[in-house]
Length: 558
Image 1 (cartoon, helix red, strand yellow):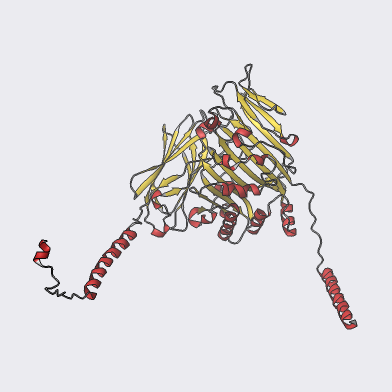
Image 2 (cartoon, rainbow, N blue to C red):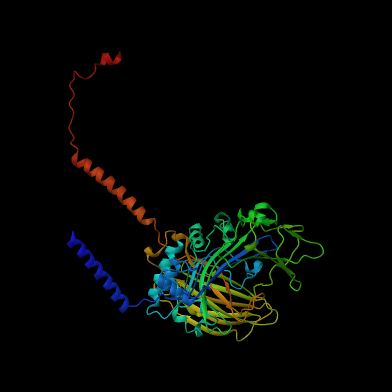
């Protein structure tokens, strides 16, 4: 027993000495955590259109210092940044990214632009914009990041391969061809991606309070996906900490844009949280610094046209634009059920002074499944000033674009419309065709038309989707309006207006022919084999019947 005790003491001493030597040789200094300046804010902006539809733009914003991200990652703690997203963000050396899931069509002519400078309308499907840091292989980082987001959001982002990806991103600024970050940027979209609750559930789990408290407690998946339009956005971008932009922070934003129609359900423009979402706000998120709800309505005059169900904490009337802003501080309230009762629902009004400065339509031309083309019509609604835009479009490789057919025309005729044109030809199964034109649109409702032709390629039968007869979706084009800002914002961010996706029918093989051939061949073989086998194996033997066995004539007569 004594020898065992001595051995244990000796081993214990060796371990302590090794630990002491390790500490002395490799001193570990606790990484100083910066003062917790990271913050979380919730904001909801609500407005009602003249046709009765209700727009809600909810933003969940987290401000995270760059130092906090790397220090927390070093210590295995990510604070306000979700670990699942933070690990993918750090591993693949992401500088900025934006992921948007959208279902429905945003009506620019009726709804204008969203009254929020931080959230813009998006086309149907899913779109991912990413700017990488100085990584050695951007394509490998893009592939790894899309696969990580695919598993995180239960989406088919892994299908964003090289044939559907371009080296550009709307996050790179005003003029992408002059941006040095273009080579480190990637953008891709999947127009036919179906958006459902499988995307909303993991998205809400990234929120600090999920849907248990705060403004996110309104998110009823049954009502959200019954809306005319809804869009889920997740983005991490760099934002200046001060005016001089000497230091930057990470701005992590999750936003939900939804357009609901109370008239469709209740045949009335009256609405409330409980009628739109079947939920009301019960309690605020405890870690939210601010939790504010803003309601934009037409200004009430001597004869009130509506009544608020809940008195606001603050109200601001803009008589110049004829709008009123009502603000609710949810952090100071409980059981909040905001709503409106209309006394005169037939009145016409403007709820947001952000009409779309341009309207854009893209349509397919041609006929058959061999040749076709696109026609784009852009109208400048500004009565006196021209508008400079960048028209960006990428087309899949199986549409063989004829660049000599690219035309730009105006009605009435103006010269000098096309300021610059950038073209990247496609490579089969490797990259799409990229058309990028800088245009100066004439004022006073002038019409600018772009058109070009293409051939539809014959592709392998294995490259067709399961529903090949439906066709292929061509990603929407983007019109970036330069030098324009939201009327209620001091930021001069570029405004993006999207076209709708286009469905193109390629030459489709008869996928039923193999089945028909197999069926006919098997039938003929069966008939031939059966007859031949019957003839070879059957033995014909005559049967001799005796006269006694035959019936007599008298017996048969009786």
